[in-house]
Image 1 (cartoon, protein in one colour):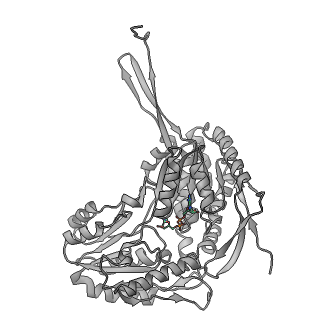
Image 2 (cartoon, helix red, strand yellow):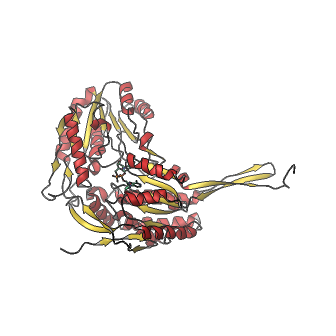
Image 3 (cartoon, protein in one colour):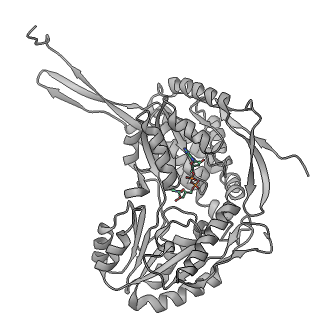
Length: 488
Ligand code: TXE
């Protein structure tokens, strides 16, 4: 058995070794085998990353926006050139199918960097005459930003946080999830190859302790966090100590509403995408599927048919596979526990409900695509984020009823509606207490579109021109053109 590769922290344009020798294992979810080790960012690494970020900021923030844009666009070119290699890294770290990673993960990361690189030169202030005097404003960078990532889209999340931050002249120290360390490392390498100065994008490895150090550090101006609601609360509480700005991209339990007049095959595609794509590990998933009474029998019949016929679970690197492994054994168990709760609370298990052991990946963390019906809003599987391939189907009769029930949650990340009645589509969506909505679609999240949650699902946005403002601060400058008028 060859010795395991040991990856390190990326500081000031290179990999650096820690002093403690502390490492942690990373497991390939599809095989259950340890893929490699990673050195934890110990105190020495943390200090050097902060010093490196300061020196990187001194250079990067002095470039003109168009100079930053050029370098970031070079990084976009490199990401696209390395698409397949980077997609494989994501498959081996996350267990998601190659079929997805090769067309979504790197592409959507590169697109976000391209989008904000294009906006960078448009950052400008205002000027207004005040009599003979005048004032003007400057949009200035914040300084050192921290990015903290979740494990479901490692490279994409790192790109979505770095893109607006760097475009505005900030620098970033990024900590990926300890489950999926490599995507962010590869992004750091690409940034260096593209000419991003050392210290502008450092990557620290480790668990919540490294994340907490970043969140509490007084030299961090802003924290952008992606993860569970519970963790988000901890991050925000820690950030309060030094009054940091925060962006929070948290969990959801989003409604997908299907009316009687919906295109049934399209609606079923949305329900399956919104529960089984990335084996259900997507925060915006439409996991509460509300189906109007008349269409319900036909919807359920076709949904089960397509679920049992069209989902190919197995080795994620096999291009035929469209349904991969969950991130870890403990997460697999957590999802299986939710399935048991669903059964014990009286829901009907229509299909799935068990762990799977595909022939080509017998030791991976797989769960069959699972559908529950005869559900009610009080059930645990209708209220809590499961973050796995478990669909909860509910029925409704009227618009008023479904709007009330869909909104009856502290979460508010996403919502979807399927109907051919265009007025009803907008009427329903305008009443949804959610930040990311789809009409006769589900899941698409282009760089141009701002995404983020209402209520407990988050604060702030990622992507979209809105997000640029979150990475600059406004300085107002008043200019006196006359001798100062003073009573003293
Ligand atoms: O989150 P965790 P996970 C959500 C998704 C689900 C969760 C899954 O809905 O709820 O993310 O990701 C670090 N101080 N989204 O399990 O456990 C930890 O090391 C600072 C929403 O990874 O919260 C990891 O890097 N950091 C999203 C990160 O926090 C801490 C899209 C997240 O860990 C910390 C994708 C602490 N005290 C997933 N404790 C969206 N809305 O767009 C842990 N961490």
